[in-house]
Image (tube, rainbow, N blue to C red; front, side, top):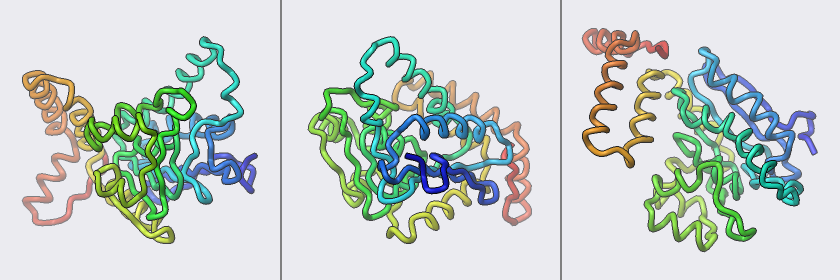
Length: 262
């Protein structure tokens, strides 16, 4: 069922920050057809919108996202599954590779693909009442939406294996302690905290942020020489940007830089 206003995914703007809210609280914001349609409609458009310089993703009610919609699990045709995953990647890849920083405001339960979506944020901000649960082992599935990519990068391979293989629930406090969550907030302060963080990022050098994200994504897979070559290319690009010129001018003028994102 859709949210009370009839929209499965809500979108609002806070200046240069776009807030995407999963809005089917009755089903704990599980990834229904309506939510997936809404995400697919909004995320690529926001990534392409030059007026948007940071994105916040959160959920309505007591859950961030309960994962896949159980009603779709009876569809086991392999071709249909591959097509479904490919459709998901149409919004997931732009989200992960966008220059724009992404803040996930995890307001409650993040299970299965919801856990994956939470870790798709560059900055993960969680309510003290949030909980993270892989869910996949319980139904004989493998982690998807890049969870097995993101989790070991956040907490290390040993902890990631323990969480994923034993299907361990991780509290918000534990997630913060092991480096899975960057910021904790009381439930009534979560969105203010997330918007403050996103606002700071939206005012930053967006192109340089995107290049930094590329370096971090490749940091664990490239040999040193290959990484340094990528780093040199990224820095050359950054040095040629308008934001770099503004940053240098602001530093010399002892003032706050006014970055435009390019």
